[in-house]
Each structure stands twice: as structure tokens, then as C-alpha cells.
Image (cartoon, rainbow over all chains, first blue to last red; front, top):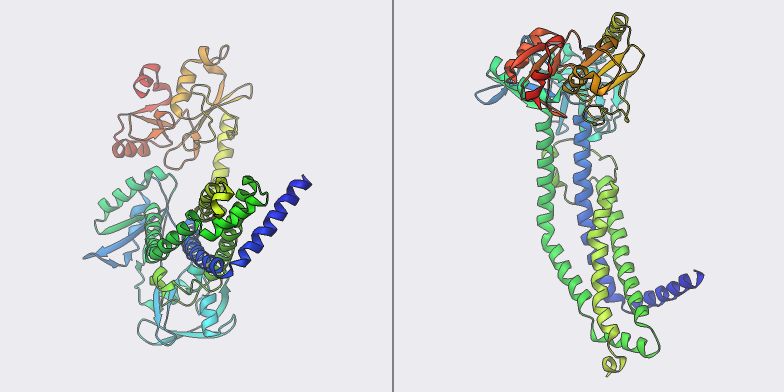
Length: 377
Length: 155
């Protein structure tokens, strides 16, 4: 056993010094390779983190949301609808919700205002998201003011700063009481933003949605499964866009790697010939080439993945943020929750390291089996 | 949520005092004696029969429960219908266990259980009627109405 390890150690030793001898060429290969892995990993990590944030948010979202439309545009919902909808079999509960957006022209940020179902703040006090707290330098106990629907400022005492697992959805959040929100937004007392339904049996979703539209033709029921599908499509589309943009780079790398991997340069063939002449076995040469492939691709893989991790979770995807999260450019800055899916890293590994290592083996095997005399002549 | 669990505890207490038997959750190894499926995977349709000797038989749907109950000599030799102490089925709208003897069953609907066409249980008749209308059901049955002949077209 010790012998085998020793054998491998010597071969790796030789491989490393042989790689160092051609610093320029191998360095360039490593750099391009690492950049490609970095781009792919960034896109993967980012779209996955976004999808996870969305899932986190939606796991607690109601099974069905009912909105009202007029002339195809969104309207507030009359609260009396909830009593009628509650009579539908299979509906466990109906809750009118109050929420909306507010643009702050001073700080150029968009806030999401919500009246929470449980433990809403007292009238006059609010809870704010960590993003708003950072941006306005406001902490619990401070008094903060926002301009309402009529342009007049309203001041609130901050009760809490929300600290939540998913920052994307809470960073711009303001929680306030029912009374304050109606005063702030101008929504009349008999109206709500939308209705949320709890339904126990998933088989009944579509039947209930159908009954609601029959009851109120201007109602627009939205199922949670539909929202999930939309999010998935959106994130899938965005990450696809990035891949398309960089596909030229990936293609260039493929050509480069293919060239490097399949055709051995005359110099390398000569080296193999000399090694055989001094007594190396074919298997030793293959082992050397194998280690060479591993060293190159593993280094590139690790460097690329680690950089991508830092890029996605510490700099919030600074490089391709404009493409990936177009809808949130107005929002206060947010940081994604670091999360790594092992399956994803494995996919990346098998798509980059393994093919590269395998393709380098075949040409070296061809060179290694030729007579050294023929190679060196 | 708190209210809901309180209500369900109340219902359970009520049921157990009336029938002298508690609902028993199907374990991962409980199999339906009629079709052989593991019951715990399909909680939305689960049903069970309790016998006076304290044993519980789990089913993956009301249909298999009836097949068993109507053919005791084959599935449980030596047991009589009189030995049954309680029957529980899962109501469709609430996915909650209800008393099977007083339940309403809709046959011929477009809702399928783990074993295909099912008898869908409801606690109230109004629910059963509404379901029959929404899901193209054919007939509403009580526990004692169900016969082997009626089960035939469900297979």
C-alpha cells in the first residue's frame, strides 16, 4: 500500500514540475478554465438561491389568492366576498389581506407594506426590514416618517427590525397596523388588497377556483402551484439568458480544451518518447497524464467554484445582477442566504473536471503506445 | 390553528366516548389486507376498522374497507360484522378522520384514490351532494347501503 502511494507521489511530483516548466501555456489554460467554471457556478448558485428564497416565501403562502380585476386591471376586493367564499365546501378559512408598495423618492427605494395576520404592531408603531434599517439608519425606538398616498408625511415608532431567514423578501418590508395602513394607502374600510384562502385538499383547488369565478365573474383566483410555476419559469429564463450570453466563451473554451486535450504537441510527444526510452511504462505515462488533467481541472474547478460562491453570496452577484434580477433594481440592497446544493456542485464537477480528464487520456495513450524510437526521430 | 387543534381534540374525545375506540394512525409497515399497499403513503384516503378485541385493520381507501367488511369470511375468517367496534374514513374536504358508519359516500366520481375509482366519504349530506354535482358522481350511499354488487363497477 505504502509503495503504491509512494509511486503516485513521485509521479505527481514529476507532473507538477513538468506543468511548471510550461508556465505560460498551462497558466492561460487554467485561467480560462477557472473563468468558465466561475460563470457556470455563479449562474447555478444564483438561480438556485433565488428559487430557494422564492420557495421559502411560498411555502407559507396561502393555497389560493383571490384578486379582483376591472377592465383587466387589478382592483381592491370588497370584504363581503370573503363571507360568500367561505361557504364553498373545502375552503377552511378566508382572510382579507392588506398590503402594497410605496416608492420613497428621497431614498429612491421601493418599500413593501403589509398588515400581518398575527401580532400586528400597535397603531403608530411599525416593524421594518433590515434593508430599510440599514439604509435609513433607523433602529428600534427611533421615529421614522414616510409620505402617504396624499403626500403628507406620517411618523411611526419602530418596534422591531425584522430578522428573517430570507432577506430577499423581508429587506424592504414594513409591517404596520390595519388602521395605519388604511390611513397611509387610502384603501377604504370595506375593501382589501386581496383574499387568501386555506384549502385542505389539493384535489379541490381547481374546483374551488372555478366556483369563485362563477360566484364573482370579476374575481381572479391564483393557485399556489401557478405561482410556483411562474417563479420557476422566470428564474429558469433568466439563468438561461446568462448562459446564452456566455455560450460564446464556453464554446471558445471547448475549442481550446479540445485542441489541448486531443492533439499532443510535438514537444509533448517527444517528452513521452524520452520517458519511455528511459524506462517508463505505458501505464506510468497514462498515470502522469491523468494526474496532469486532474491537477489542472480540479484547480480550475475549485478556484472557479469558490470565487462564484463569494460572488453570489458576498457581493450579491455584482457582475450580472442587471440581467438576473431586473425587477429588483429599485429595492434596497439585499444579500442572498448562502446555500449550496451538493447535487449541483456534483453536476458542475462531472460537466467540467471529468470530461477534461478523460479526453486528455486518449491521445496520451496513443502517443505512449508508439515506439519511442519513432517518436523521437 | 390553536382553535382548530382544540376542536379536533374535542371531536376525537367525542368520537372515542361514543364508539369506545380511538383513531390509530397507520404506521409505515401497515398494509391494506385487500390490495397489499402501504397505507401510510396515502393519508388523504386512509380508512380503518377496529375490532372489539382491540385490533385495527388499515385500508388505503373506503372501497377496500368495504370489500373487506363485506367479505369477512375470506379476509378475516372467524370474525363477524358484530365484532367491529368502530370504522373511520377520511372526509374529502377536510382530510380529517370521520365516523364511517354515519358517513355519506359518493360513488362514480372523477376523483381517484390510490386504487383507482373510490367511494369518497363525507361527514354531511350537503357536502356529499355538492361533491356529487362538482365531480360527476353517480350516487350517494350510506354505510349499510354498500353491497358487493355496487362495488363491482368501481374496479
